[in-house]
Length: 412
Image (cartoon, rainbow, N blue to C red):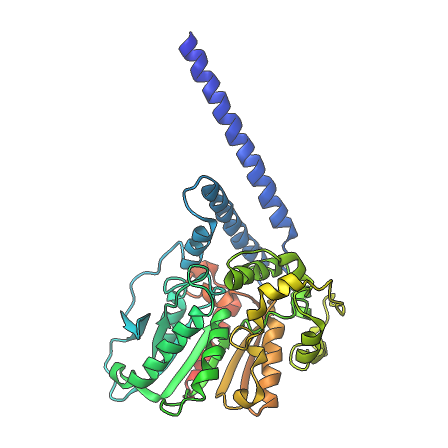
């Protein structure tokens, strides 16, 4: 009798704990699910909400696992970005090697070519703290399969384990090595394009600030930037206001992850939300390059209002002074360097908080005489390109945007 009662008691405790856990999880998911915004302009917006809902579930699991001491929630997020469903076999030749100690993965056709091929160096996004070969495997395969291109993906080290600027240094080293030894990999050194998505686009521009000064290396033929991350001074541009709750990248997340990338922790996010990390003298200095005034009027609808910065935090400014370096915020690149950049392909998405950074960079390039091929996805959102090859999880704009890149590459 006592044993039965004891078993029933433990079962009641177990079911009670499970019920509480599910109530907490349900509240968390409901609050997140209701605050997100999928504008009518996003085709298949319901699917985007469901994708985000699934991510929320797994991320909440990461919080639980961290509290139990099993693994960090950062590790769970990396696992999600690396792809729960790995891609299957393909007809490409894929090999891994080192370029000056930096891991790279090379994708190319198995069919021999009578002449040297075009090269595309791809730098993955992920804010410097997420992403890997796995997260961008489908994207790199797409580029290699859809064009006569040898794709080189760079596996740079991630923060906070490897603090900034280890990422930029590794990318620069790998690119420099490839420019020197391209012929050994069947690539014409005069036909090398640098590309990257999100923060990967930032690393492309950061590396190019040094590459244009090198006289001993072949010059890069072109840049390909997909919704690049280019500044951390103004988090209240029109696109930040309009798209702050549009998946798959929120304003709160980019500030929190940016703090982790720069400082190793996520403190100070609230002040940064109001641009409280930027002193007035620097805001005035850089408003010639970073300001809502330079955004075309057609992008200022959907509820944008002119922003007044919040209270300035001297402590936060001292903690994040690195964001004012041109390698971290490439929109601060000086004109003398920028005008030496090659022709650039730029893809922006209407429902992306980084949209306006792309628009500001487009203006800066054009003001300095650099030709820009710009494609704007009216139904696009941040991360849409990474869904290529995911079958029903693809969106109509996914391949439409990527095919414009293939058309651009064919000129080189």
